[in-house]
Image (cartoon, rainbow, N blue to C red):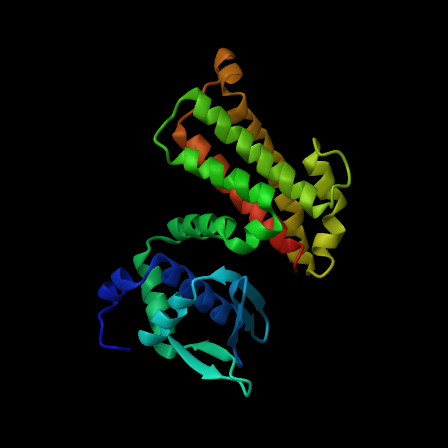
Length: 261
């Protein structure tokens, strides 16, 4: 560490450096124990990073390579080189200490979940694999934080959230089954999503599809908020739209991850 106090370091880190460091530290911790190595790859299309650990394997595409150099300079990462001169990185002990401190500063576990969900579905990897769902979720969150609470905006949020679930279901089912019945599509993919999971995890994914069905109904309610108002069922509060957005984003991300298990 360069002697910089943690609060000052958080101000110095760029958003790109903060994000990639937190994701690297989380991968390091998720891997448990043993050698945990991040291998850098530089190509014409950009800088990539590949993590190899005892229980976790992850990749990042097209991020700011300069952010890594900043993290090394601040002592948060150790750098080494392969016999071919390829850079590789390990999260340092100081880096883990800083990460734990940083998580404490970011607020309650609930607010951290909000941040993680929003960051995950906005990430390059998710957008590359599921561009349609990523677009709909991005548009929904832009509207959610726009301070415009008109019925028109609520309806647009609902349309985007509904579109995200439909797109993720279509992606995961390779277009099999009717697109207008996403829960049916997801149900057909249940075995593929859970074949490598234990019994208790399998139950969670099954319930996740049930939650997707409930979230879809909420998203549709937002999309038809004018009709709902005519039936004396107006939007309860803006928190209803927030809950729909975060729940839908969580579902899309976790269903996508289930297919990688």
